[in-house]
Image (cartoon, rainbow, N blue to C red; front, side, top):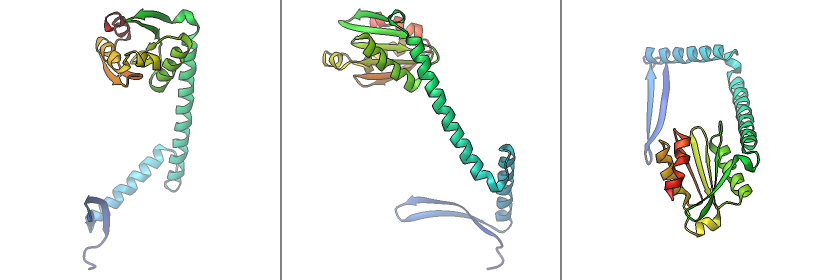
Length: 193
């Protein structure tokens, strides 16, 4: 029993109901694995300018800083979207396929901020549909009355995204797509209805 030397469990996983797979190293292989892990801890500690003893605290602090920076970035993007939306002069409201469609082109906005801007545009314009394109994204938002009259944001965004070199989809009231050419996607509005 003392012949195997060091023994280290390196993985423990569930493979079936009531069955576990445990992988371990013994002897020199276990010692080499422990040395490699310690070297990794020291290397990462050096990269983070901390000691191995305070590595966990340092990582938790960095995660907190990252979350705060992400929240600040999201807030700045929301403010950028609001600034770009401006007044009625920056948006177009057109009659297409029996629906009033508010169209807006933004820059530097993505994801949740783009969806929020679509909500705001739909409310501000009084249109049936809001279409907002950004550098790499597209959002279509439909009002409840427009959906009841047959509008489907998911189908519309599929046509627009294809014209813009991307793809997307969604529900009848809201859809989102990734695109490469926002101008081409917005130009396809005339033929999409």
